[in-house]
Amino acid sequence: MPIIEIRLSPTFKRFLSSGQASGILLLACTALSLLITNSPFGKAYLHAWHANVAGLPVEVWVNDGLMAIFFLLIGLELKRELYVGELSNIRHALLPIIAALGGIVVPAGIHFLLNNGTPTQPGIGIPMATDIAFALGVLALLGDRVPASLKVFLAALAVIDDLGAIILIALFYSGALAWSYLGAALVVMAILLMLNRWRVMVLWPYLLGGLVMWSCMLKSGVHATIAGVLLAFTIPFTGKSEDEHSPSHRLEGWLQYPVSFGIMPIFALANTGVIIQPDVLSLISSANGIGIFTGLLIGKPVGIFLASAAALLLRVCQMPLDLNWKHLLGAGMLGGIGFTMSIFITNLAFPEDVLIVSASKMTILLASLTAGVIGFLWLKFFGQPDVADRDLETMDYATTSP
Image (cartoon, rainbow, N blue to C red; front, side, top):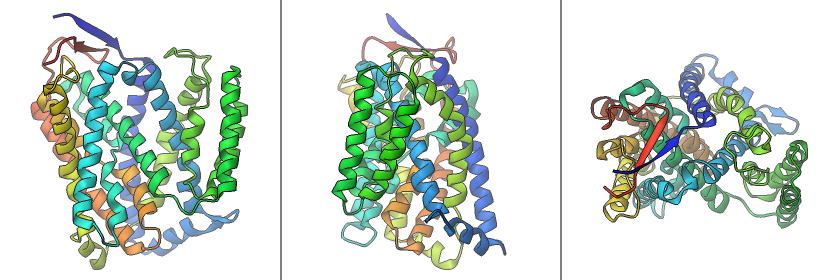
């Protein structure tokens, strides 16, 4: 059977490597944050994150400032995928795109059915997200037991998943709009797009404009982190995966490690400080808690698997040659690791209710841990590559549907 061979680029392999180690570091920071919060130093620890610096609480600087850089990296990764990566070929892209849509709609539907018309309905977006660092970290523990195609599929799925979360945040988790500031942000973006059009290849004008755009977004009512994504799509990309002269490529390379080993651990420390008390634990069994837990643990794998199966059986797209149905189900299980984006959306969904936020975060942690363990065990026993001679350097797609 004729095949198409795709080489994993050095950028993608660095991305995998940083994501794997980052997942372990995030887990350690989460455990540390929970330990300190529930120790005699807990009040001082939480107070430190709410202390004002330059007119804003430290927590806001983390969630609105540092996370804008995180979203910038997501935007750059998405842009690369669209130009030269897995999403650049529509035949290859359709499977992770359709799978991601299934993994968004089904968990959201579960939460909506349980919370429709209640004060916790805004939490509908919480179980929709996949944490790419943790998911790839689990795959890293499996080593050669899983095919390279599964890692690429899961990474592409998580990128599309993040895009869905970004759209959700922009549309439904923004406050009352201040049109003057929003207009100013869009004007800055238009100027940056003009610089791109004129092939201005130095980075500093884009970064300076991005800072101005972020400041305007912060005051506009649209969540400030969206500025990071918009900035990513204004920065020139030459269309060559490893072109060192491409500003987009250079910036992505510079940001991968600071985001993975700096911004994400700080985010975990700032947002997982949950006081474990009876009231919090009881709320995990509430409609909101059940919606989050079942959405991540059941809705994600069901949505991803059924959407993928429908697309493959209807011959809308092709299955990678070294993957099988068990791999798709395993990827769906790992898709239930919500963590970063789920916690981020929790803060936006319930800004005034500390107890619901705490219960939601505890539920996210429990569901994500459970999903990670189940996904790991499933792929450990059923995830061996179907093609014996595949290695981490290649990924093959059949030209015909399964």
